[in-house]
Image 1 (cartoon, rainbow, N blue to C red):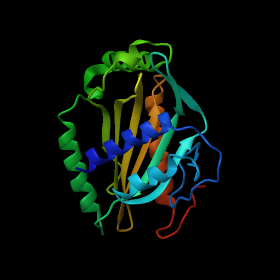
Image 2: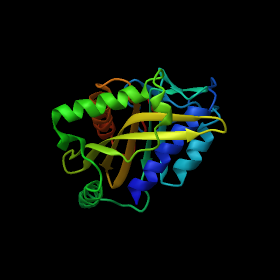
Image 3: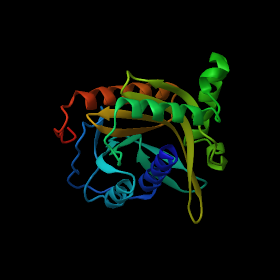
Image 4: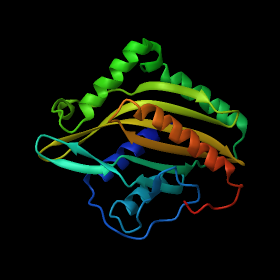
Length: 241
């Protein structure tokens, strides 16, 4: 249930980034450290208030972040610019939680992922081919990327990080259908569940797939973010810096 809700949230964030016009304003506040190389979303950006409303449906908003560098999504005749990478953090409701809750959720999520293709099980040659095929479809000059419909996610890896966290890395294609065009995003989704005191946090980071090493870069980014969040004392606010 949690996985479906957050996948939908990530899709809606992608849509907002893809169709919103950027504005310059003061950043919002955050209660977790920002992922490396990302900044806070802007308070007056037309998408920010809607993002906060969306996040509030799933838990407490701990921060929305994005990269300064952008990528172009190209349709048949329309283009849209979105961040190369964006992220959000949520505190799940209905606590308090313990390490056993993290383990139970890990087992539940692992079982559900058995229904999807696992990239690591395809062998190195197939892995490289799959990544390069997705990269080709994502590049702005590739017309085939526009016609691709949403594909089921492909699992790259799912692993525990000690007894109080786990990480899921997957590949996803998302599309937004406009009145006169279709835009497709191919991205690496990196998500982590982290126990912080008696709270359970969901950290989600999405990196547009443009090069094969975007996958390990996303894996490294979510691992660093988890370490940064864990390093902040319980009850303190990092302010997103």
